[in-house]
Length: 346
Ligand SMILES: Nc1ncnc2c1ncn2[C@@H]1O[C@H](COP(=O)(O)OP(=O)(O)OP(=O)(O)O)[C@@H](O)[C@H]1O
Image (tube, rainbow, N blue to C red; front, side):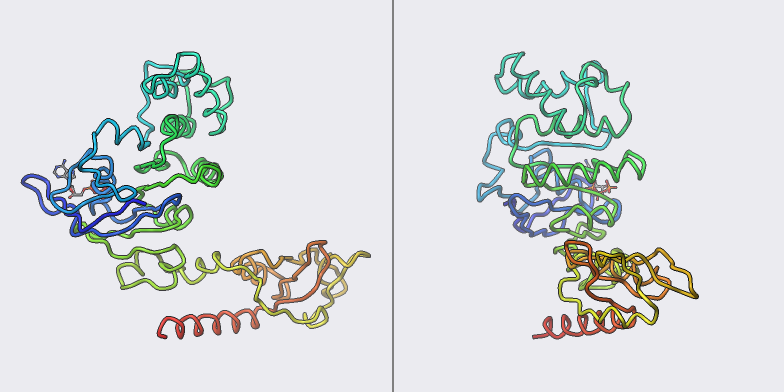
C-alpha cells in the first residue's frame, strides 16, 4: 500500500502544488490520479519515488517512509513509465528493455533473454527487438516503455500519461492489453491522466484532483459516477454518468417477463435460441440477447436498439429464458437508485 499522510508540496517561489493530501493506494491495484492541468497530479506521483521531495507530510510504501530510504534502492523497486515512452534513441528495442536487468547484475545473455520474454508479454514479437525506437509506431514505443518498466519486476509502478501520445484506436488496444497484463501481474500502480474516461475504465480507485492541489474525491469508479461529492466532481465525471455507472453492475438481479410478453412474436429456432421478432409478417433478425453476466448498460443499449423495445435474456446454452421491456428496465433502475440512496443515508 502507498500511503500519503498530509502531504504538502510548495515549489520554491511557487504556489502550493499539492495541498494536505492524504490517501491510500491499495496493494496490487491500479489507482488513477486525474484532474485538470496543473492540479498537482505529476508532483504527487513523483513524490512517491522521491524525484520530488514533499515540503511536509510523509509518503509510506508498505508502512515504510520513503524519505528514509536510499534513493537508488527505492527506485529499483518502482517502475516508471512516461508519455512518449522516454526510450534511449540510440539503443535497440531489446537493449532498451535489457538495460535494467543488466544494471541489476544479470549477465548480458540473461538480460537479453528476460527482455525478449517481456517484449513478448506486451505484445511485441521478436521481430521488433532489433529495431530502434524511431522505427516503431507510437503505440509500439509505449509498449516498449511498459516492458522496460517491468524489467526489474518492481512491486510498484508509476505511470505518467502513458497512453496519451497515441490515437484513440491504438489507445483502446493498449488499454485492453494493459488490463490483461495487470490481471496477471497485480502490481501496485499509480497512474496520472487528464482523461476521466481512461481513469474510470482502468482504475480500481480514482483520485480526482482540483486546482490548487486539493484532492476532491477518492473512490471506486462506480462511487464517483453514482455519488460525486460535489458539483466539481459531478461536472468533471461527465453528464452521462448515470448511464456509464450501469457498466459496473450485471443483469444478475434484473427480473424478466415471460417470452410471450414482448408485444410481438419472438421467433426461436428449433433449439429455442432467439432468431428475431416477427413484425408485419417479416422476421427482423435483431433479437438483442444478453446473459445474467452482461452489464446493465448492455441490456439498456439492447432494449433501446431493439425494434420492439425489448432485450432477450438467454441461458448459457443460448436458449431464450425471459424478456426485459424498456419500461420495466427504467422502473428497475429507478428502484435501484432509490434503494442505493436510502442505503447511503442509513
Ligand atoms: N519544478 C517546478 N517548479 C515550480 N513549479 C512547478 C514545478 N513543477 C510543477 N510546478 C507547478 O506545480 C503545479 C502542479 O504541477 P503538476 O505538474 O504536478 O500538475 P499536473 O496536474 O500534473 O499538471 P498537467 O496535467 O498539466 O501535467 C503547477 O502549478 C505547476 O506549474
